[in-house]
Length: 397
Ligand SMILES: [Zn+2]
Ligand SMILES: [Zn+2]
Image (cartoon, rainbow, N blue to C red; front, top):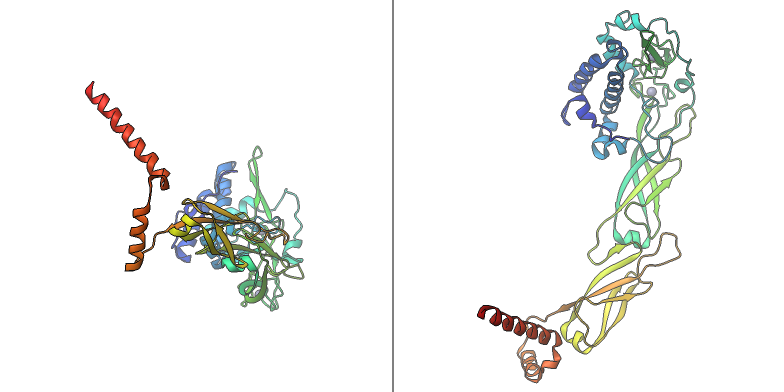
């Protein structure tokens, strides 16, 4: 599938566009690509659907925020059914009717002329506008410390999650009123246009496929049937999680309406970088500064692990960059059973701020040094001599 086009680009507006200008831009596009004016033009129909979807998202402040932050992925959770669904989430019936009403001249204009009568097209159950509706799954990204990933933790989160609006019981219609059958589609939720050869069946642009519209929207929820509330959630983070780990909290997503089940909440974890440890799968990697004299004569040094300090034996004559492997001292696997290893890489440390006694000792050491103490240096000097020999021969010729 081709990548989805950016909603702002689709509508030809800047990312900073105001709600008024957004509405104007949408109105222009909707007029241009409306199937009514482009009968049989499949491309125009697709474009009309695309700009309507873009407007539906960007005209909703919370969806726009989600989209700005995560793009298209922020709107449809990739976690199976129940994610963003254009048809079902189309909550702007009243608003869209307001826009299209003025494009097509209110009640009896061009639009009605074409679609009036509502013939053809499979009759659609309008149960979804009046029956139970389940809440959407929600995604939340959470940054945690390395320590929380290593040892597990518990977090208290306060998340803005929408729930059924109580005054209208999720209908979106003001108290004492009801959703009414959509006149545009005769309650079918879809409209048919065409000239006999070509027929286009599309989601009704007035009711957004709901089959019903709200004339008198509920003031508490502006006709959406949902209200945002802050919910406290206790999140248990098991040890061993890593960046990209996904925690599912069943039933803590968006609330259902009219008795429908709540969606699920998915928390995606991002583990912050740590000063000491880097992780690759369940193995940990760290650098260990070791005094140069210990590298020469050997010794024992303390290495931090997630269980505390461990003793590491340094062999005499250890070279720069040598990696010691401490088995079972890595991260716990999130399965709770296995552990990775810790790879400790030796970094030689040259001493600074030497006192007189140290300088004297090192000078004595230098005096006592022999060529055979430095095989690397010897090989290097041999190679240099060979180079100069060869140069002499070549320059003579
Ligand atoms: Zn309709
Ligand atoms: Zn309400």
